[in-house]
Amino acid sequence: MTTPIEAVLVPLASYARGHATGEPRHFRDAFLPTAHVEGVRDGDFTSWDLDGYCTLFNGLPAADEHLRVRTVDRVEVRGSVATATMSLNHGSSVFTDMFVLVDGPEGWRIANKVYHRHD
Image 1 (cartoon, rainbow, N blue to C red):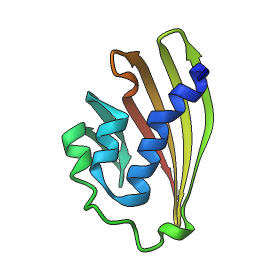
Image 2 (image 1 turned 120 degrees about the vertical axis):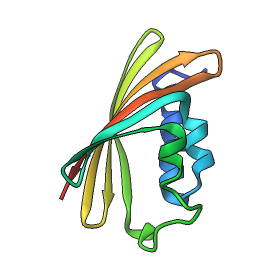
Image 3 (image 1 turned 135 degrees about the vertical axis):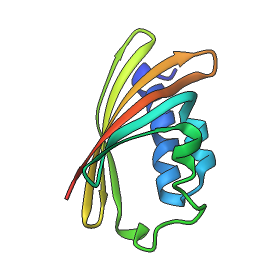
C-alpha cells in the first residue's frame, strides 16, 4: 500500500522529469491546470499560469543536464493537502522550490509553486 508521502512524491517526480527532459507534458502531469508558479527572477516578481510556465521549456534537456541535481528536502501531509520543498542545483544557480499540493479526483497534484533563486 502506498503511503501519503509516497503518493505526494509522484507529482514531484513528474515535475523533476520535466526539468530533466525539457518536456512540458511532465509539468502538465504534475500540476493542476489552475496552478501558478511565482517568484523573483532577475529582480522582478514573476507569475506564470501553467500554460505560460510550460512555454519556458523547449522539449530538450539542458546541455549540462548530466550535472544537475534535484532533491526533495521535505514533505508534510495533512489529510488532503501537503507541502513540499525541493532543491534544484542547476550549475551556477540553485533554486529552492516550495509546493502546495492537493489530493483531488486525479490524485495528488501541485496546486501552486513558489521559488527562490540562489546565485
